[in-house]
Each structure stands twice: as structure tokens, then as C-alpha cells.
Image 1 (tube, rainbow, N blue to C red):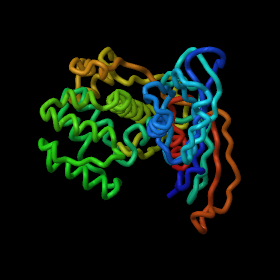
Image 2: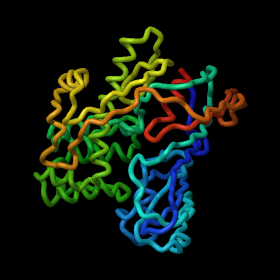
Image 3: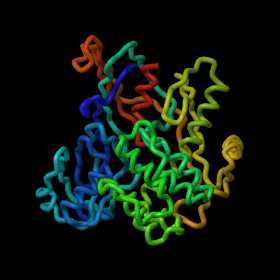
Length: 364
């Protein structure tokens, strides 16, 4: 079985963003990090600067177990302040000022340099691929995001919180399993639940419930909007994946399957010049409405009236993506997995497409 991300340097990501540096109140800088989740890195920088993390903006999350470079903007900060920030495995390159923050999805493209290790079969060259959401979207080793998002849309707020806080996955650490099981065991007795300090969001939710044990809607509001809206989007992403997979399976004789942490999906090497919906409250796509009915969800459910910022309209996503700047390196001995081989591959993708899906297609 092939391996990626055995070391952070095996997965290098660089954002490409058109930036107009000149005048404005938003200080732009490039953050290069290793072994840091994007949001946690931002929180750490904000703490070092003694400013509120809400003043920061960036286009999207980048992998933790990787070396990633991305653009960040912070409002109303002197450029010299950044020079004093010293954090292990984070480097900051100030660029200058602009008159607007960075919006989610505003990146032109991402360039990936990936080392595939422990190879057992030849890597197949890929010109285009089915534009599926991959494991990261659904929670990585704890793929519960889509389920929680579905519960939020259905208005099952207590059950959504239980899934957010409890029910550990097999891949989580023993410490995580212990405290998640403890929360479930003591559910309702929130004053006597202890949460590790390195999980600030969960800690804030439990602290709120300790004072308001029946206010599950209020507890969800404690979860940062960036996270809670992502949960609903994860459910929409899973629906997109299923719609695309069904179309490929029914319309292409030559297709194959790839695995994700939320199931298997059909792929084809042919380019699909069409888009599929991420269903929301204004969805009119018949296949999507049929799929939602199977999930016991109606399109009206996406109007989450009790937490309005979770309401979601329909958006559309390309079914296929063409690779740019594709380069496949030579086969070399794998110094980490003795007796095996490795190979480097690099390419560029538009914002929102997953390099790990490309690798799954190449290693099928």
C-alpha cells in the first residue's frame, strides 16, 4: 500500500494568490508552517501578538502533517510587530498592506509537491480527475463532520452536540477516546466533565452547558462559525460525492473506485464537462432531491431558522478538473521503507480541489 505524508516534507503546498500591495488597513503576510493546523497556527500567532484572532483572514485550511505556505491578512497591525513573532515550525514573511481581507476560496491555485512512498505499482499519469471531496473534508481520522452537519440541518441539536463531543473513532488516541467516552457517560452532568486544555472549542461548549444544561442551540453557537458552517458544508459535500459517483457508475463502462473515509466513489479518466450541486434550500435538481429524501432530509431543512448562519443555499462544483504543471519524477529507492521505491509528483490545482484524490487516482 502506498504511503504519503510519512514526513511533513513529503507533502508541500504553496498558494498562488494575486495580491495588490499598496495602501490599506490589512497587513498581508505569507505563513509557512509544518505540523500545524491552519486555525491553530493563527490562534498561536494572534496570542503572540496579543490581538484577537478574528482580525485574521485567510482563504482556507491547509494540511497539518505537511509543509504549507499560505497568504494571511490581519487588520490594523504594524508591520514591525510581525518581526517579533517567533514560533517553532512557523515562519512569517511580511508583504505589505492592502485594502481588503482575504476571502475564503479566493486563492488562484495551489501547487503541490508530493512524495509517494512504499510504492507497489507504477503511478499512472493523470490528465484530469473526478473532483471529489476527500478525507480532510469529512474529519480525517474522525470522519463525523458530515453526520454532524446532517443532524444540524435536521434540527437535532442535542444529537449533533453528542456527535461533536463524544463517540471516538478507532484511529483517535487513547486519551481522546477516554475523554470522549467520559463526556457521553456523564452527559447532562456537565459541571463534572473535564476537557483537556488543548481542545479549547470543546472546553468552551462544555463550560456553556455546565451553566445552561438544556440550551443545546446556545451551545452550538459557542462553536466557532467557521467550524459549525463547515460541518453543514461537509454534509453537502458528501451529497455531491454521491451524486457524482452515481453519474459516473451509470454512464461510463470504464470506471474504477477510490476509497475515502466516508465510502467508495466511482471515477473515470474521461473529462466530465458539467457541474453537480451541493444541495441547499433552493435546490431544484431532481437527483439531488431524490437523494435527500433517502437521507430523510428535505431541501427546506437547509433553512436552519434557529441558527440562521447555518442556513445554506445550493452551490455547484465542477465534476472534473484538469491538472496543470504536471510533472512526474524518477523512481528512487525509498530511504524510509527499506526495499521499497518512492516517486515525486507535482501539479497545480484550483482552490478547493484535493491533491489526495489525484494520488488515489494515480495509485489505483
